[in-house]
Image (cartoon, rainbow, N blue to C red; front, side, top):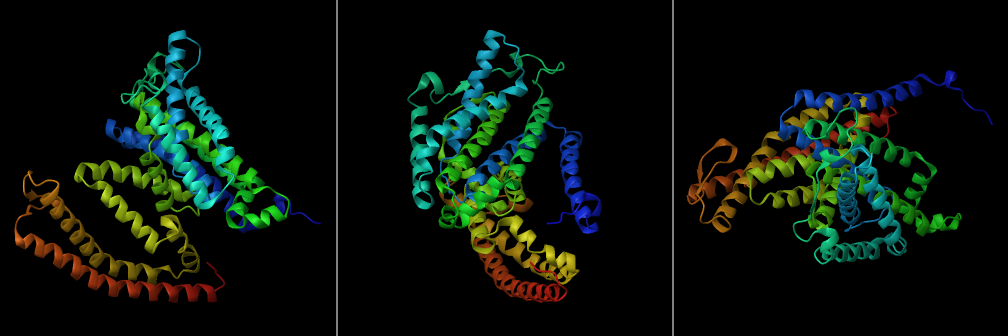
Length: 432
């Protein structure tokens, strides 16, 4: 058997390797420059929350995307990691142990790992629907315990901590938000590299095999249960790191960390971004975090918009945003992307009109039901619209129905343009 030395590697292989390392260097550069560009307290907090959400979504994707395990209780390990981190901060601060704050996320990670090992062996004996129901039951059990075991969980108020009481590292007190941002960014980068490396190992490939065909894995001599259990432990470890970073950021851990809503955030981020690609949960985490902060200020029913986005992704882009983008990669390489982009530009205006009508209709209905006692004048898109006026209903219906009719025709054109471009790319030797 012959091997190819690095010196004899093909130019295309060297180009791909350089592009790979350039991408990681670009990520590091963005993390370093971001506070210089967006230096306000709100921007730093948002960036910090995005980093935490990225780790949490990627840890969830170890279960769903890599191993095919749909979990409704991943927040258990996120929350327990956060609680142990807060208790560790209080204990270290009171005892004045020489332990700096950057080490605390590792404590949360090992806490998540310990509980994943404790609960995972039974949970991972089954896959599919059975595993999903077991994870949901465990989540409800732990969440209800948070309100009963007040000495550990602090009841509804939770447990607070003061992160500045720990040993200073290089003179950093970790009081200012910019210092916490860099701490979270550093741990995000470490977790990104570790989880990406995990996907490239033989174990990561075996997780994919268990996801696709567990019977065949068992036939070649591996136990799917053991593979699922180890993947579950890794997911719990990284979820614990994310929970600890969240507790450090807010200096509090409460029962909300353990709820099914927190697990739903990870599911939304992973699935909307795309569970089939490593970058998918990263895209989803950034998008979900940003939208949750922006939409919550704009609408009282922002969760409804999240549900609509999730339904749209499941119905029209089951591969998520990353999967949708990756479908265009062969077209880009073959130089056939421009016809598709023109079709997108044509379809964009009527689609935007349809979405505007949908948003306007939802806000009018909400103002008549939930916000009946509020000011009847709405201010969507910078306009003033009287929600009690029949004209407002007519405008919303016209925008929605008219935009839908035209958008449907234009998206047929997009489908034809995409098929033609794919055929041309295939003829040139580029396969999707």
